Image (cartoon, rainbow, N blue to C red; front, side, top):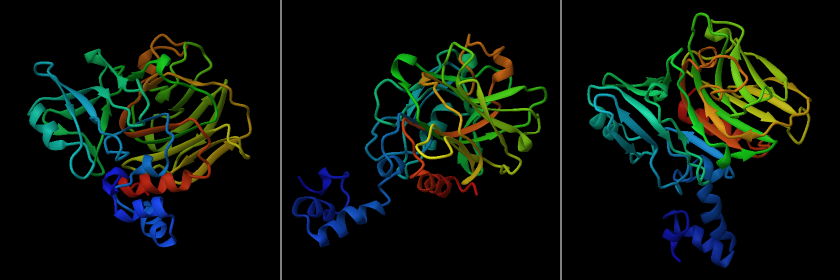
Length: 320
């Protein structure tokens, strides 16, 4: 087994560190690899239950990034990553042309089976190209949810059913939308009124929205008046091993916590809306309105890694 067999061709010192255990080999290999650009977020902090992004999150992941439908003829194509690990805009633009492109599949990069987020109904698909122009905010490619269109992506409950503790990292931008009562970033696909859900509510002016981590009929209110104009990183950790039990962080800073008990699982996942048919009112009230860049879900308490994960995300998206 050579260096190509370990971390896909990272420096040969890694192999030396593994095989002979010398200090020199370990330092040059394993420690050195931690700083190697080929190691991505999920390589450094593994164990995610599901992970969706328009950048490559693990060098081990070899599948596509998204599946896109072209609205002119409803043809579809898988779009992978370019040499820098970003969604391949050359392929995307060549396929869509002057038309609009919509997401039918946002592929899961966690390595778990059957957890791609899917939307087969054309009217409910989020957009990535608008009349030939790729959706971008702050120079980052993103998916666009247009308020009132019931757009959402779904992961089947039978393929994703994880219990607390749950840690989530999400990059998104909420737009102002008159008359919106709640704008759901993600929901646990629950058919009951006791979901695991993260959403904005209480104000139609996006920078002043209150975000709520809703678990077991307990809403963790999070005043977020300090949101950035381009996009924001929210970290939620529910049922942590240490006090506080539940925490919400915005752009690297804690904005709220409580010690309430959380019991609801992530039994399936809906991105950008509540589960259709759930006890949560009409779909139009609960649509996400804005852009989504990245969503990562861990079936574990990531309190010890949260700063490092947030730093990795911020270095890529340049949020704060």
